Image 1 (cartoon, rainbow, N blue to C red):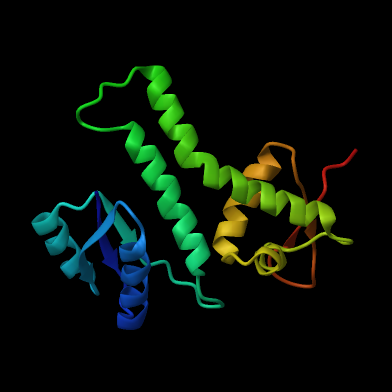
Image 2 (image 1 turned 90 degrees about the horizontal axis):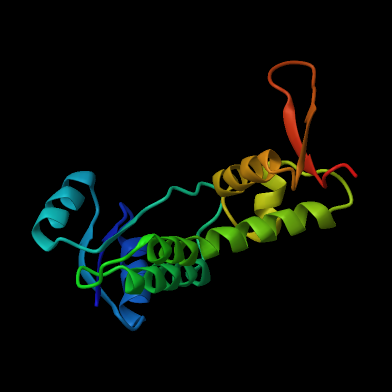
Amino acid sequence: MIRVLVVDDDFRVADLHASIVGRLPSFEVVAIAHTAAQAVASSRLHEPDLVLLAEYLPDRRGTPAQLVERLVAYARSSEQVTPERRLDQVGIDRALVTLRAEENLMARRIRDAVNAAAEPLTAAEVASAIGVSRATAQRHLARLTRGGAVRLSPRYGTAGRPEHLYGPPSG
């Protein structure tokens, strides 16, 4: 059983997340905290395996499907790493690949959205197109740009920093 601590300052969101987690097989909510101090105290008392920590999303709410996907990916990776099981480097690498599978899927969704667009997109437009936060889109876009899967081009305005536009790689 994976013991989960849910931390969110919004009581309704915390209860919603706890109910989603509680319905999943092999997950158990051991506590809900609404402040950092409560989270620290609950962590010490309950020693959870996983802390589900709130992420502030000012422009949209997270979806239960994304939460379930992340929890299932964590469960798969945690099955491979247990105190009773000694892992060699191959086992550690396998567990990390499992844990990162969702991250790779998200990067692929972002790359596909950029490639499908008629015009280069901002990070906010990419986020809106696939239903994630702007910060999540920016993190993946930066990695995709470094790897050459997406092209970054600045758009200069009259003042301030240039706006970053993301498009398919040059070819």
